[in-house]
Image 1: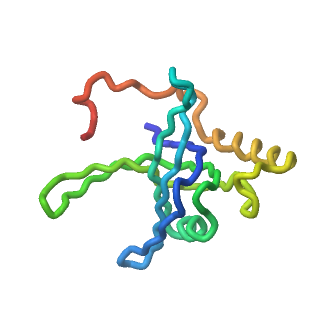
Image 2: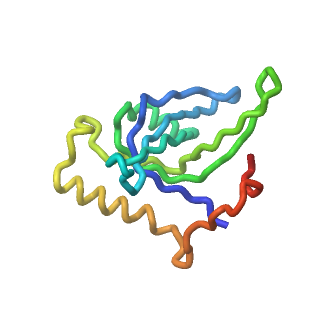
Length: 150
């Protein structure tokens, strides 16, 4: 089995850092990721993906990321549930990040990169796919809603 996610997108708002009861830092943010097609209305649909980072990576993200910053995130999908005070069960699917790469310089994000920086970013982007096995042929479509975990 393989659970690996690679996303490139922009933060929808500033990240939020909290601490667990054991004082472990955890930072969350939402990534806006465009889909690879244009709708009939001429717009590119966007998904809003919740991202979770832990420990040192959480501190780095909280201290360096801001709304609008372009990043590459690698990690895995996690689904969890909880019951609220009314007894209603809630599901959340999020990406637990193993790595977050800043794809724009901190001082000028949103304004584009210099050509040599773009070359470095292209090389870094290519490295994101090195861990995917050669025989990985994609995802198996879900045939029925009965196969969904929620």
